[in-house]
Image (cartoon, rainbow, N blue to C red; front, side, top):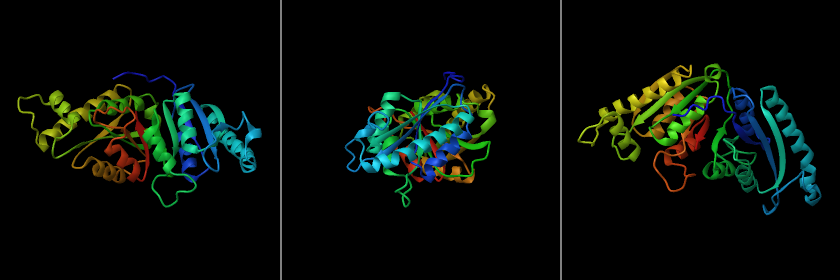
Length: 304
């Protein structure tokens, strides 16, 4: 694994003024980021038909009357957030745009190439849903890791559940987490789930690495031991960076087990790789990550 401990992190924070968006700000202030980390604050004033996508600062004269009325409030909101984040050591930039929110946010992600996108699980118009349509589109299409925030009583150290399965993106998740000043803000539980039937290429590789033998048809106790060995490797990796962690090994359906352990541990944040299986689309969101994002009660960081 690569040691990127002291590299600054580039963040895009999309904010629409909703409770979930405010939870994202709260969560950011409870995490210690490397020095010189930059947060690009972004809000999008929705256009009537979603056809216009432009920067308010660049072309204010082309805005509709309604959008012009919303512009000062949007600017003031971002400037207030920027002051909060600067107090916590962030470098900040603010941008107000006008257009269809999801395409504008994706366009800015492509332009800025951030390490991570941060947004609330849902916006102002999605009170009855678990995750809003804009957030769902961003987590499926953004070429970056995505932190999806849900309201919570965040108290340091945050209770972080790190889901690992031996896949390349699970290792990326470990590396990303290790870039941050973990001992000060995080209490980490490493969870790895052995499925009753070994059907994935990832688990086949784990068997090969931790339990080489001629007969690779594994049964559950064997797979549990293999997952425990891998989780122990992750624990040692974090220990070498001064981070103490705990291991929770489970057997069953990965989604159900991760969600159950998160509830039992009263987790503030789940960290998970975007997918475990090789896929032709690098932005692919696997079924486990997708269901965890949709169904958990806490915040989730999906690592790409």
